[in-house]
Image (cartoon, rainbow, N blue to C red; front, side, top):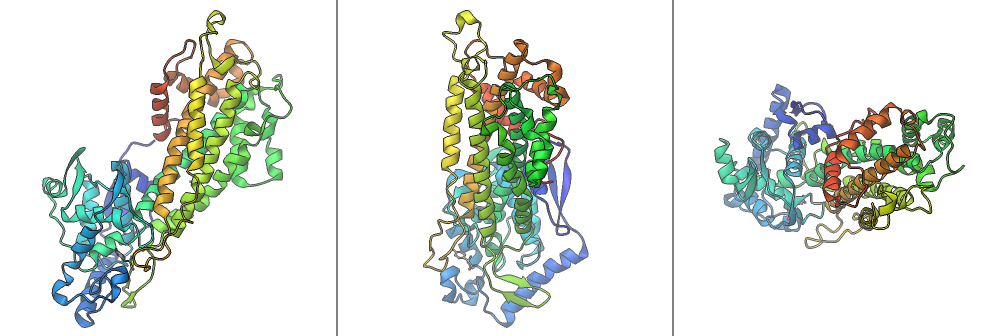
Length: 520
Ligand SMILES: N[C@@H](Cc1ccc(O)cc1)C(=O)O
């Protein structure tokens, strides 16, 4: 991971997923464009809204109630109070709070949408939103309560609240009131102009933020699973010919071919004298590129879809500045993000399942071609009391089962809600939360497999069944790095600490893997 701090410019070029992740991980600071085209455009949107209100006096969400309450007319003397009500009546989120990292991603993603200039918000609002990021004031956002169409209304109401100095935030690592944090940071609580609460809340920014972070984790896990497959193959005395590029030219899914090439490269130094234990390995080795490759092939599509959403005006109504019109539609609908999340979570859970099968082969003397039971490295006279990785493998089964269970698509569970105004919704935020949970579980499975493959290869080297030189440079460097984190398991020992450390390493994208992202 690159730790140098850069700037991410809002209001000019399209943003990339990595920009959002860098802001979330505090490796970047937001900068609002000072280009006259941008500031003029934003100002023009706010001015047009003011004019519309003055001249015609009838705008959805400005002079009407919200959603199904559209036919309720708000008299001019109450218009100014309406945004505050929207932010407050949606203050009903429940469940776990988003992490500070996630909350920063949400702020950044919402800022990106508002900077497209279709929401009619003031420059002042954009500055305040950017100010929360700059001063690291992160709203405490409960993760439950969004149906993902009508936007992430409830979780985003916590962003609106922080901007106006209501509810709680994290500031300098401490929980405090938004009012207190704004004052300490030298910011003035925002007074919401007409439509501004709706503009902050009426979009897909929570699910999109979650999926930007999921995307980067999925990319790393995709490559890590290829590396684990290489090591599992050596540990099981597998056949490297399964990854021959001629095979993959004959069935040329590009992502699948890349994964096969990664593994083929890892195994290239095994040499002509190496004799695999079987002519054809079981599918969890032989078909690994076909499993990992599906994710690798879908990642570019996931990127395009997420980045289109990220750089879009996901709000309603939109202000068409050039045409001086108000466009009423449904751009708060998170169907695309929901599908990316539902699709990605299935592909990630398949990686968990693949690694679970690989580990099952490694620990079982019926399949592991001469390795000790449960990969225990104990001396022979103490083998009767040592159980090696038995419990870790049971854990892997549990994490895998839970990951697979969570693959139930969320997007098909649309509920008609809000007096049947929102009678078809995306459930994209639930899908994104599932996806993050599945990523966590699969990272745990990968951590366990790292212990297993490292132990298996160490045992092979000890027994002289393979030689150091056969591992090649990349695998040697990787195994050396693992050796600094993972003990050789001779006598039984608790491995929770090692597993947690490895999960942190994975989430921090600690090891360079194949020198490239899958979907860069
Ligand atoms: N998303 C709705 C607005 C809305 C806002 C808040 C609600 O509670 C309900 C609906 C629309 O644009 O039509």
